[in-house]
Length: 519
Image 1 (cartoon, rainbow, N blue to C red):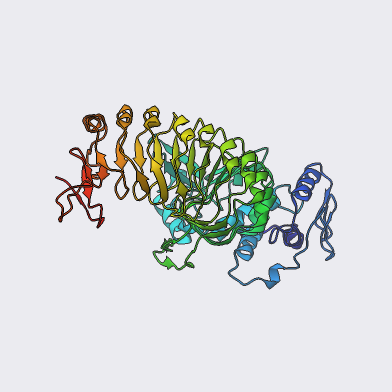
Image 2 (spheres, rainbow, N blue to C red):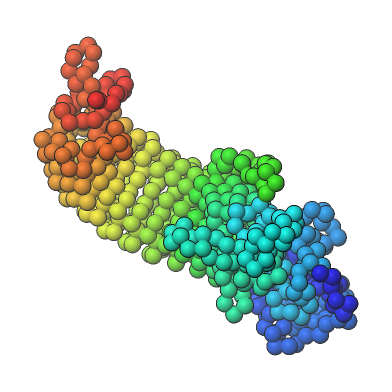
């Protein structure tokens, strides 16, 4: 649609250029602008429109504590998403908002997100490709012959739901994956939707945003520092993308965060298919970097879930981690952390899942690990330089279901107290320096499904009480043929096995570490 003759196009452009472009505005000032606009403290149409303390058209616009970038639309490349979104809101958007409309900034930003993330290529409810729109109109193939609507089948319920497409004439609050209250965007959830592009700084200018879920897409580039302006943000899920670079320090300004998931951004395959079938080539990701668990982590005191698996995060776990009293899940597998595990981690009494595997942690298991009474899953496998014995307090973790300690340098014997872990389902102690025998008390772990003790110095024989578990849950139903693995393969020189086991499913040679699955 062409703009009306009375519309102050230059004022709209100037407002967006000064107050939105590249995230120039602060939270307080944008809220003040919205409040003043709603209150009617506005004039428009003369090139010198004002909104509160915003003055447009004179080249000296200000809005609260605005930080001027000096970048203008005129300086942008023709295909820059910001410029494309400007053309949409000025000339194509049916709403034809004026500079005094209180949701001008929001609608422009939402339009920008659609352009920046290639909404024409989305699996669900992106902008209609022009040829498709013409075909829909000719065939009547969409609901009510309206190409602005789309249908999505809920995989959980099987119900077909109706939504409004992005960049449609509908209010942006009605677009797919968007939730609002009071006219302000509160949530954007677009997981597994084939989004292709970068996170633009302007995302940080949706002041009331609480939830952002862009997981399992083709999002690449870096996380912009403007993300720190989203002071109400509680959930940020960016997992399974191709993000890289250092995390901005401003991320730690998000003191209301409850969930932070940055996992699986390393070794992204970069296979992103656009709407026309062409492949979008994106940079190879080496994962996100930086010291995500340094002393700043203590500022996120409401955090309940953090997952940074498969990245390139480094540094140490700061003792400040002990301040996160609500933390229930902490997964930091497959990074390059190198430090001891601080005793303060045992202050996280609500922790149910603690995974520290595939890093370079040193020292041992914290002696007071038993203080984590709620812990259900504990993994420290493949750190290599972890040493020492299993603390007696670990056997106080009576809620524990999974314990993974393999491929380290732990030593000592397995205590008879292991029988107290009656909920245990998985126990992997392989590739360590453990000694002694396998306690008969392990047979009290009636739910045990998976037991690995190969490539250790655990000797003797498998107790009958343990073998009896193979008649319960310690068996294979085609899940894993190595459900009970030990050094039970006969030495071809002495013809004697280091560990005698009549019920093992897989046996290894104690000297050569060669293994085979038994029939």
